[in-house]
Length: 349
Image 1 (cartoon, one colour):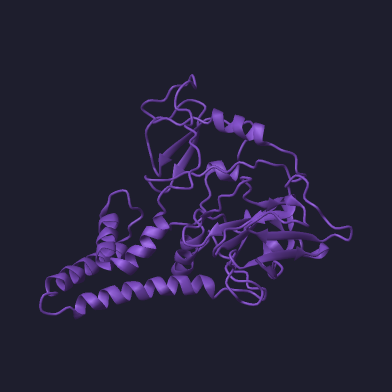
Image 2 (cartoon, one colour):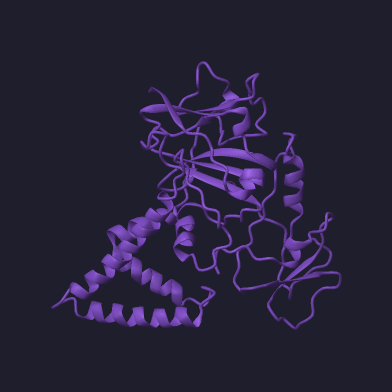
């Protein structure tokens, strides 16, 4: 169930004026605060991600309103609930580019220290905070634990069983990567239509989690990911600059906004740059559109000399990836048939 978009009282009918919500376990029978809206959570251990638009669809800045909304958020345990609203307020911490990457640690762990990696996975699966664990999951864990223990016990005189387990895990990891990268469309952008509604598409879900965490379903957002240019060569800011030109009829339809962001592929983290500029979006101030409608985005490590800064997306002087998002998709973006234009090299650095 991890990664599925689940409907709750909060998501299905959010009041415009906000309110008090009691997040409780499914079937909870205790008392909740007066005037609180009951929201049953499918799992007792949950991460809640709240997204706030910083700009209106017309490009008006809503940063002040977004910060005000964020400052008023408060969460407390039911036992310590304070109806005055004076406690439990959000602790806002700065984004750090130097924190450890869990993704990179997992990727390298399975490659460099596979036995230690599998031991860590064992411990994580056994944790009471790892949910949901179905009967099938438990049976699979039991079989793996027995096979893993037996293989480690035989390693002094027969390393083949442990080698087989390690190769199997590494083959599964390769399958996850291949599943994502094999979904390239006609312009080499990767897109999945089933995000947030996985059903039994476990490999698709694992592939998305490798590159995009906490993804919305297609009614809320359209995602397209790119690692290579239109000719199929890896994106590399040390050797090339690139352009993406959206013709007038190639821009996606949307209710909220679209945005283009660059990431480091190993970490899937934003690219530090001198202007603290991390995206080009429909709401970017001063975004230049040609008279006949096209919007061109310039991808390069250094500011362009003959192009508007508003249309510049800084990329690293190394390999990178791109993520194109459309929030509140309409038309082809909502249907999942929209294809972003190709990424073209313009000149060697």
